[in-house]
Image (cartoon, rainbow, N blue to C red):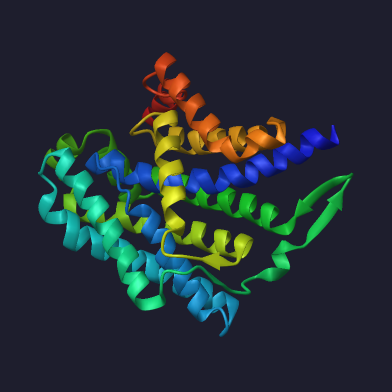
Amino acid sequence: MTAALQLVVDALSVGSLYALSALGIGLIFGIMRLINFAHGEFIMVGAYAAMLTAAIWAPFAVIVAVAVALVVALVTERLAFRRLRSSPPATLLITSFAVSYLLQNLMVLIEGARPQTVDFLSALTRSMDVGGVRLPWINVVTIAVTAVLLTLLAIFLRRTRFGRMTRAAASDFRMARLLGVRADRVIAIAFALSGLLAAAVAILLLAQTGTVSPVMGLQLALVGFVATVIGGMGSLSGAVLGGLTVGAVTVLLQSLLPAELRPFRDAFVYGLVIAVLLVRPGGLFRSAAAMQERV
């Protein structure tokens, strides 16, 4: 029982980061049908902003990270994607890769290619023991922050005017525009929310690992995309469920695989993803999530 509870806590912690990453990607895809692989670089710039200001004051570093990721996301939408909005999906996809590599190489020019370490919220790396279950504070904080952000985002999307506009655009962008929804405003809101979620992931990841690098966001962007596919493309609640599922499978395989196979854990994860998509091409949670979002 203790081992099972430990696995649940670890799975929720890892799945929370994946869920936030998947939701940031899913928000943009739902409106623009764009797989924004530059989302990983939003996470990266937020982490570097926190690292560079961590010595001043940790709360200030958090504010700076959020502000920088938000601004980068909005500038990216304005300069890179706005004029290409009516282009074919392949053009938008290539543009997202171009933005990703541009931001990576800019950071290499500014900070260098080597990973850097920083003492950021190191108190959260301590653990507490609850009934024999080891609970690192960073895991508890990660789960709590994710729960709060998802709750606030759900309230925003369902209870506010701009949130309803965003949901309408995600459901049928063309019809929403015909009904008076302003495309520029809605897409800017989606990118701003994506930047906010990326900043949250950056802060939590930096507190957990204490390391930044120009390519740190690549893995999270890839996992976020996979989680979005698993949950059902275009479904926001499906993206969250997909992220939690991928996190749970990752932790479970890390625990169950023999030691000699653990370095190949990700291969097993993506193999399972392929198997799932062969059976359910629309994603595991697409139908249920879609029904919930129509309520």
